Length: 140
Image (cartoon, rainbow, N blue to C red):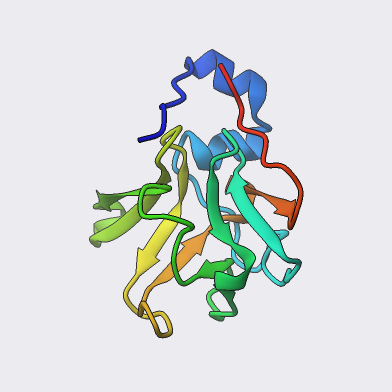
């Protein structure tokens, strides 16, 4: 089990850009078709923009037509956590970083094989680490 990264609200505000803070800490959503990773295909790993926790491998990314980067599954079962989301009058499954609890997006049961899942993730909630580069975790 990974060690949680717990910071004060003030520390998160200092570490994150206003857009990152709005999505990761306030459960916001970037505009569809606007994210920097929507059409990228460079090999590597997508990590949490808040703490550096590895989230998704580039090989699991697919074009869903949803307006946000989509993945079939995370790098491991304990990379993310799922939470029931009742916002907007519908029940959805919110996806958060398991290390820092940052809001990443949502997962839907309409993805391609083999999982049938579509992890619909905000670009601003992630950073891309090129294949072969070290993944630096943020420390307190």
